[in-house]
Length: 427
Ligand code: FES
Ligand code: FE
Figure 1 (tube, protein in one colour):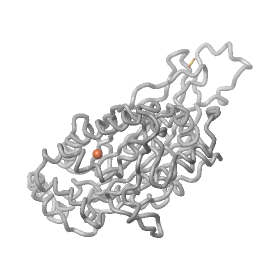
Figure 2: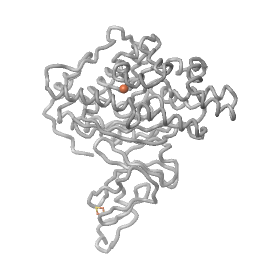
Figure 3: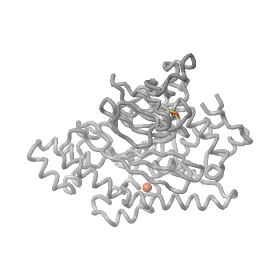
Figure 4: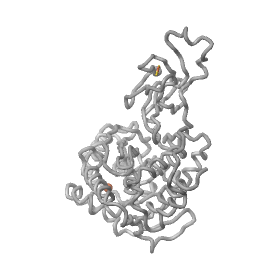
């Protein structure tokens, strides 16, 4: 859609920036690389835009960004999902600047051209000047390619992009598992908050499967919770806690291995104790087995799934990144509840979310301080590379990808392998 940037950097230059154990610090600071990333990654592949639970009814919409492109994700009258470029076909004004809502269509604030939920141009005021000049049917809003998997809606500027199912590949198994975390209740978005940090988008991309930082950066969180909750840090030395590379830049870090197998009912004693107040309330309505399953769901899926390039599914929330500039990134956190579950369950899930990932939660503030510091260090210029070599010596190849411990940098190496492939393989 955009005229591709004319690069000074050759493909050979770019390829040299990413080694198997390190990346060049210019990946965080070079504006030319940032523009190329928009052309070669965000304008070319699938980018996550919304969850279906955010737009359940006809007329529901939410706005989002696909790289540089502002879009509106809509549910039309026939139930179809549309991802429309948020730019009027007259002189390009943005049509909608609220995050979400319900509407019959969109009317441009400049000269009031109006569009249907599926993007068709419906009305033009004072149409006499347009006789023999235009046909409304020729000027719908520009549509992005759209597809969804397990309620996750992705869009692509590139209409020749590979099928979404192929792009997700082995990550689909983990998406399926994530969606099953809710004891039979479907996952739904309960709310969203966003913030920006002064750093490159890939610093956050790295963080999702960075188990290594957890006991260091999140020490303040640990000191704020009970012993049982802090005990989840046992993953640091649990040999079943692994990170798998899943191809196409995707990876999964398993922090609570016993929660991944939903058929097993172990490891929940501590949770039953911790959530005793909920157990009591739920026991009035459900049998003990169902109560155990619901309480177990309070811990989320037990793993972090990183989907290249812009969404993470973590424990019980989605984290969506948007590159704003080479040194600025916007993060959206979507808190996840269980559709149809007792109110006490979703209320408690929100409290857990607020405590760690909420705007004033321990996790978000501590993480973003660390990310800012990485960017400030990077501003010192070339000379010192960014190391992503932890666990290289114990990484092993398995049929579906590379595997190493959950504290290792396997997920980062997977993301940078994809970054390099997309940035140099100009299709
Ligand atoms: Fe939208 Fe003129 S720019 S109607
Ligand atoms: Fe963190």
